[in-house]
Length: 183
Image 1 (cartoon, helix red, strand yellow):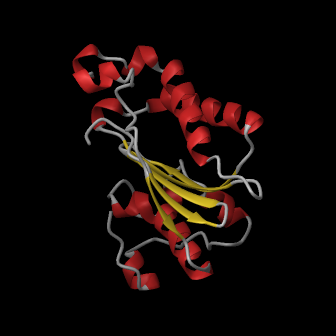
Image 2 (cartoon, rainbow, N blue to C red):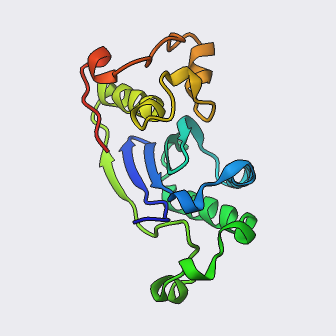
Image 3 (cartoon, one colour):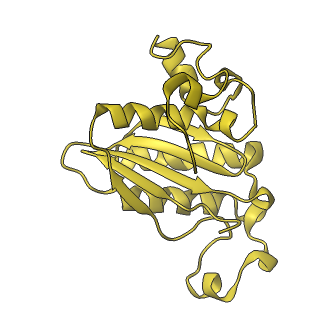
C-alpha cells in the first residue's frame, strides 16, 4: 500500500529478512534516516539482535536480522522500531490528509503497515541469495548503476570484510548469479 512500510519476513533459524515499503511522499531524508538509526539502536540495547544485511532505499527497505538463540521476538522488536521511528518523526510524517479512518481507529502512523509475512530460509544457498538480493536492490530499482554507489547498505561492510568484491553488482544480477530478481 502506498505510503506504508509493508514488512516481509524470511526466517532461517533465528535469521529474519524484512521488507518494507515507503511512498515518495514519506521519503525519510536525513532526519528520518537518523531517527530510524536511533530507533534501531534503542531497541537493540533492550532486545538484542544483529543486523546481517540492510538496505534503505527512498521507497522501501530490506534487512536480515539474527536474533539470540531461542528467541522469537521479531514482532516485538519491529513494533518497537516502528514506534520509536514514528515518535521521532511525527512532525515530518503525521499529515492529517494521509490518515484514513482505519489508521485513526488503530492509532497508526502514515508510514507503517501493520502486517508482515514470513518465509523459512531452507539452506545457506537461499541465505546467500537473500543477501545478494538485498545488496543488489538499489541497482534493481534504478537508483544507482553499481551496488557500491549506494551509501545506505551493509554492502560496504561486506566489501571491507572481503566477502563481496567492490565491483560486485555492477550490472544485471541475473546475468552474474543466475537469479532473476522480482519484488
